[in-house]
Image 1 (cartoon, rainbow, N blue to C red):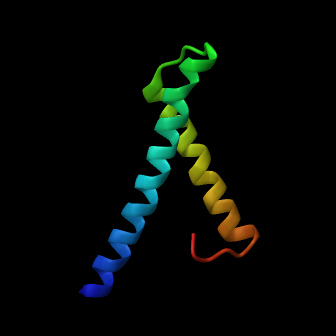
Image 2: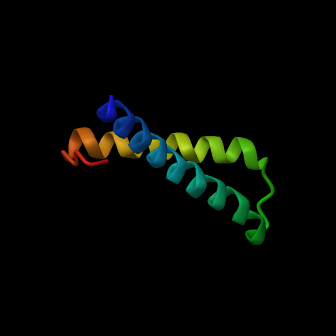
Amino acid sequence: MNWAWHIAVTKLLKRFVQIVIAWLIGHNLDQFGIKLDEVQLSAAIWAGLEYLRNWLKVKLGIKWL
């Protein structure tokens, strides 16, 4: 049971970091005069980060991602 919790917490932390990065990028675009819906933009950036993570795992063999 401990192994399952370890995997769940690890995945949760990875997703949380991605969401925070996406939100920060979306939130800070106002400084450059770009006005977009922060929630939709953050979701789009998060999806892009998830795609990049999966690509790095499969194509480059980075297993710890």
